[in-house]
Length: 602
Image (cartoon, rainbow, N blue to C red):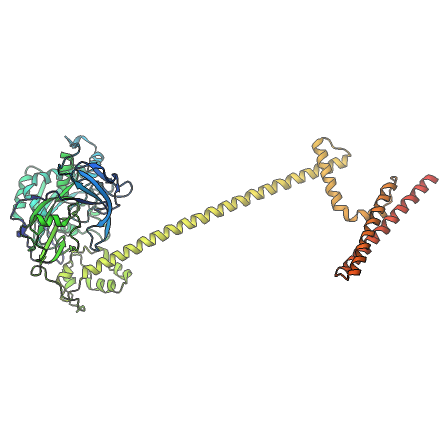
């Protein structure tokens, strides 16, 4: 017999389960239109595969997740796609999201199904792919994709598989009725999951207030290794971490997952969906949902098509809107008030409570905390709700997170016992949402900074590469120039160029030398005495050019003086300079003629 442990805290609210267990599970019917949100679980939203006007069959894939974590969305019945619109979806904030609107044709005609005759002949990855393609996500909590959950990290062997049939929250009886009437299907799904995980132990946990379900599951489990374990009724014993502690005595580490300690939990509704996907080939297109409360005449459990508007389901149970004080989606402890009855049933919707004022009276206004400590006594996670409340209200999110805010399972036990009527869970949800938003913005900012830094690094690398190539070109040009100069010097020294390339280099070098020596050329021409024969004609030409330029400058000077221009002084300097050039040219010509006469006399 399995040993049981206990978990700290917990409460015993009125169960109110008998109202919805008097009748068998009924069909929820086909509404006038189905609204299928593209995101019904944790992970990325699906992307539509259909267009308005398309005809679809029941079970046909309408949307799929192409990247990220998620599962497909399927048509809950046959009909026509009426549109893809932003519509209200189940959420505490009443937000809208993208949804596929399907207008049923009434035929409820299935698409072609592909059941698996013997899944044991397939590879485990192939079976997990079938579970994913069936669109199955957890149906007892936040809706984590089942195919991902059934594929734990390779270094975390699952030794204990727990099937959660505790269903501890008041009013909700969907899992209870499923275990009573469909125990064979649930057990069939357990077999598939056990074959995938190969655990050493499989436990089906049911609270002791469900004797019919306990009997049915024990009967279905006869001759198998699965063990039905009855746990004491205490809220929230159906919480994943609390149930693990009850059955194993181990605690899931803060920030960790059950697989870290070799345990995995699956809901009975999820097990039934796995059976239908593998043995019948049917994707997840419906679920069992409890409709209860004094606001309906005929409470019970309905097999409801995914996408059914809440108002249609309420009408099936004889809804009287004038009676109700609050309409709650989920249970009274962890659910939230539903303001719009057009909101659809999704894969995680397990209950609708149409509560009157007598059942769930309007809470009185929030009063100041009296520091009674009752919230800490009932917290199943052994947190400090009072301090978390202060920090959340003061928006001191760092301190709240330091006090393990994200370990809070939002069970509502603290709010239930608070004598000051403080909606503690709402404060915690707000703080978590703000922290997630800040983290997302920080991630976005970090990515933007990384992109900017990468761009700057790329530009710097490109600039360095350009500088390097420029330096290499300059170095190569300098080396080539040095080589040319060396060749030119060699050619000049030898008196002739050895080849055409050397000749060109010599000519270039001589031109550079002439350019460098140009300022001193005039002085050298007048003072140098060489043995070469003077060029009288060239000297006379230079003299005439100098005289012509002198005459031009003198004319410009006279005009400037007559006009009293500002540049007179500048022109006078230019005339003096040209006059000096003329004198030097005359002296050079005279010297050349004298040299010729001397040579002729000899």
